Amino acid sequence: MILEIKDANQKATIVAEVLLDLPEWFGLPESTQAYIDQSKDLPLFAATRNNEITGFITLKETSTETAEIHCMGIKKKYHRLGIGTQLHQAIESYAKSKYKYLQVKTVDEGHYKEYDQTIAFYQKMGFSKLEVFPTLWDAWNPCLILIKAL
Image (tube, rainbow, N blue to C red; front, top):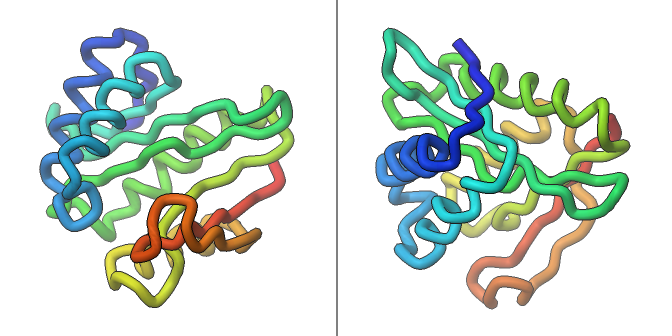
């Protein structure tokens, strides 16, 4: 089941629970804490199964016409069960009434297999590569921006 979560503290709890299960993607404590803190003020949809949180997605406005998938995570034991697709569909439906485009930032291909899987997921959702910023984050994590028209 996909639910929009409105309560700021509940959002932070959900994000913390999921991201702590994903150290391969969210292994930097300062960065993980920033996602947790920022989630309180962003639209958030959560996935549940048998009353357990399985994943979430957050959205951040980057301009009047564009929103960014700020953060998304699915607990490892729930990968490849369609939960990411359901979360993406929920956030896209929400965004269509407000924006023309969606974007997402991730680590460029060829650096980490986990992020290569992330890119493949977003491409399956209809995103296209826009540009790589080699040092936006740091030299060993080049930032790839993917975009999608809504």
